[in-house]
Structure formats: structure tokens, C-alpha cells
Image (tube, rainbow, N blue to C red; front, top):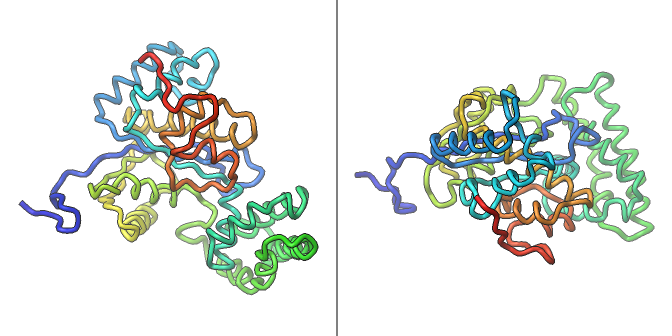
Length: 342
């Protein structure tokens, strides 16, 4: 018998299979797209148990649709089914997690990381200043300009996104001088050569890992969170055009650099794996619940039910909504544990 000396586990221990799917993908259009939240869910259940739960959902909803999606669960007439799915005594409790990405914040984080090299702290300072420091119109222009700067595809002069971005940054720097807001715009104003070099590199072809795609880093974080107890993990993921062999290799290598015991990533058709269907349900409902909270019209009960599933490593910049969505938080007037009939 062979043992892993680092954590005391057997080196030949069978990996935990975690089935994954996502919701809210808009390609590289993260600002002004169809959705403002990206969600990536993982479900660790035996296939047979997942099949039983999917059939239970079908029996409760009784829709003639051949393939069920999250929007079936989000209909008000099926509210009881959604509450059952997310309930503390429900089928997913302790067996599922969802990684959330606030798209606008992800754009800011990626731009700051590319140009300044210190993504988290500077990005949070800039994002928290936001419209309050720079005005809503200027802030929205900045988000759009940052999105255009980072995206791979651009039809026209490759330097145009650079010029647009730094025009907005200069306006933000002037507002910063007047209001005494964080010094990030002043620092960004000195990075034009880095931005130009980035756009020039794109002329040689798209990078293996596009800066603006939240799927790949979300998968890496998913692998890390499920293997944090030392057990090896195998991800079973819904088929995606983005998940080429080279990118899967990058995901595995990146996860291992983070200390995750990721043994591999296998692609399947969602309709052929009930675990992936459950991950699809969770990702879809989580994206909608989180988006509602972000936009100030959240449902306190659904948010409380979702909260135990939300990964602490989620990429989220809005403090107010995160105070309700984040794990370990509670919503005033809503019990920490809600009981629903299963």
C-alpha cells in the first residue's frame, strides 16, 4: 500500500468525481452583455443518485420538455421544487458548490492585473471607488473601454482600444485629483506601453488562455476547492468549445500549481450524465439569484438557501450583495437554516 506522506492519504485512492457546468457565458462581452454574473457549479454525487434526483425534478415539474434547464426551476409555479433542491436537507446539501464571478469586477481585476501586476488589492480599491468617485457615466465608459482593450477580437486598428482606454483613464485621474480617491487611475495612466504591447501580441494570434474568459480560472478554483482535503479529484465537465486539449492541459497544470490534486478533466454530453444536469441546474439558478442580489431586488429566502453552496473564492467586487451571498453570512430576518419538506 502506497501512502501520500504530505497528507496521510493513500496515493492510489480513487479520485472524487465532480460533475461541472456553467451559466452566463457571453464570450468576451463581459460588460453590456446578456448577463452580469457567471456561475460555475460542481456536484459530487454517485451517478445513480443523481439520476434519481433528476427524475424527481421531472416528476415534480411535469413539463413535456425533453431537456430540463434552470429556467424550469426558476418559474414561480415551481418555486417549491427550487426550494427543495437547495434546502439544507435537499439532494445537493453538502454535495455541491458554485463559484460566482461578477463580470464587471472580473474585467477590472483582469485589466489591473495585466497593467499593474497586482490585481486583487488595486482592483478592489478601484472598484469600490467606482461611480461614487468618478461618476456613473465615466465609470461605465471605463468598464466598456477596459473590456474592449482586453478582448481578443477587434475589427479595426489594434491601437484604437488602447487610445480609448487611456482617454477614460485620464478623465478618471483628473477626478481622482479633485476627490482624493484611490491612486489606481494615476498608476494606470503610466502603463500605456504595456497595453500597446498586449494588443501587439494579439496580432500573432489568440492566446491559449484569453484574459477575459472566466470559465478557465473558475474550473481551476473548482478543482482546488474540492481537493482541499487532500483527496484527488477528477472533473467531469459539460462539453465546451473553449475546452480544447491544450486548455485542459493548462487547467490541470494551473490547478496543480495551486496545490490541487486534479487528476484530469473529462468532457461529456450533459444529457448523458445526470450529475452534469444537476450542475447545470445549480449554475443557472445561482446565476439568477446572485444577479438579483447584485441589482438590488434579491429574494431573501432563495439567497439564504444558495449561500451554503457559494464558494468563498468567488470573484466578486460588490460588497453589499456579497454581504448577503457570501458563505458564513446571514440575512437579517431569515434563519440561517431553513427547513423545507424533501
